[in-house]
Image 1 (spheres, rainbow, N blue to C red):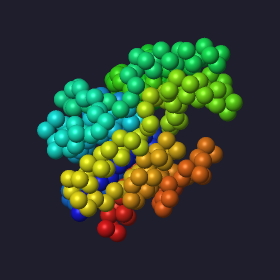
Image 2: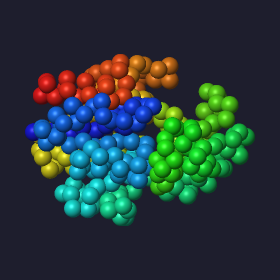
Image 3: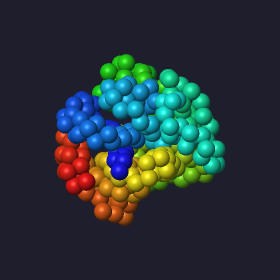
Image 4: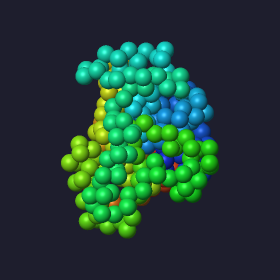
Length: 277
């Protein structure tokens, strides 16, 4: 039996303020002992996630930029599954990883965000228009981390000036007319040209099942942006208390709720779940 953990990062495996995963070290080690797979599913860029991938020491694929791409080491068996997927997924190589593209390329998203901003008549400030220093201030990242967070391929994070429900609806409608989508993350809105994290997770979950037969899938996330992929796993876990922006209708069935957000909640949730398997 193969245990596969799909996990969001910000405010889930990573502390929302310090970006540390160290409070989850006991659970990480328990996963290693069980030879479990840990698949990161994040809004972070390839460059950001590669660094964390190396720190954690797992050799599994990961999903980056809200499902815009899947990255995997070139010699890993699951790469063959991705190469054989129909319809065929474009592959290119970056930072010693094979990258499978599921989303609209970044330069097209940047252009579309400018068009949408003009159409709705309000400034929409994307990462492409921010400096490394401005991103660092907005996120709490270091200057080096902020620079990596701006090396985007499939996802443009942005903020809406004088945000309101009516304005958000207009922005979303303008994106839809262009074949794009707007999703809410922990700190930013995101303009994407793909179906979100769930498609990437679905592709990988199919691959794990084909390779290992029986697979127990666990998913962890903290926001509505994660709920679609949590619907796909056998054991969905939501960290943090419910927010006003959390639509009850999209909550995953059978979801376990841990009020403690970040790596402390992640650590307890994973250890509790492993104890039942």
